[in-house]
Image 1 (cartoon, helix red, strand yellow):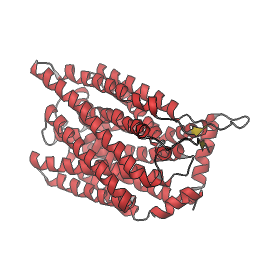
Image 2 (cartoon, helix red, strand yellow):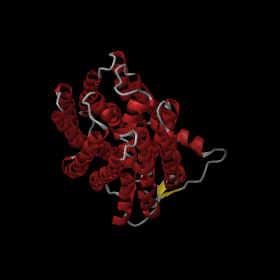
Image 3 (cartoon, helix red, strand yellow):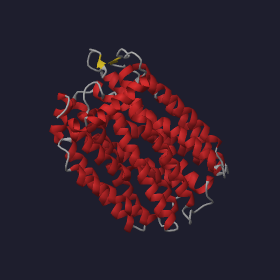
Image 4 (cartoon, helix red, strand yellow):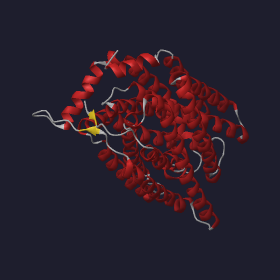
Length: 435
């Protein structure tokens, strides 16, 4: 395992630089996966208005699931290699550059370009998700255990503000374009360019000020980083009982993340296909949800450091269940706005609490590897959740209400599994090398 340099405690500027990556990459997830390109793909690229048959929705979920299958297969090994060779920052630069490039190329996707759209989505999202795991691996290096919830919440809240800013810029352009009579196939591609440019610009502080604290280890004779990476992952999986609360939580996370990722990639689709929202109204709704998500991430981050990660996460999962049950019965747009903001509060806080808990349970020097497993669990969920939603929508010939209520089951099961996780024991196992 990699040692860590005896550098001074991370300064406020370095913590800000780390959090700025959440600010930078949130424009991608907000615009491409949550608010604009997903709805554009379903209604224009792969469909023609309302997706009555459910085919376009299914194609979207297939594309996101392929992406997450690729990340699932590569994340633990990339994390292990990054730890052993102290390459987290180098890999982060490569994945960031790739995401920016492929996001810009999404501007080439127009009506009927189904395979081009799916291919570029898979490539850009793969780079995005890989970079998420790598930036998360820096958290245990820059934050003390008692501050991890606060720092993680700071990153998530700043991230939602970043998504808010980029989505706001896109909204201004969409309003301008519509006022000048432009078609949706003209102005949606430009929002992809706005998103790519904002990502590149906002990520600059991360690469300027965030330091790689890990120390490279000498390569064993006759081995490569790839073989070492696989060996470390095998070692981690072999010694699962030493970190049983971490792995229990990863299973828990995989279950409730099925629900989170489904909502993230299909909320705008549901708003337009079921509730009748237009492009502008959908964007405004996501803007408001980003504000409540930022408040939720920051507020619950403070609560988490006082009450513990497990109780905080349990409360946020209960909010998720309540929001989705309400969504199933609500028929009015006003009621859907209430549900959307409940989802915002739960979204920011549940993601932040989960990341901090993985950080607390991660042994020193293996942060990137264990966050790779976090990515593994999350991406497994990201395959299952959307595919279940897409399959139910397709089988029921477009019944997205039934598909949405099925998502609540993931949060209920996650809440029950969370009760088996012992936070103190998991932290002691990480500090002691097992438990």
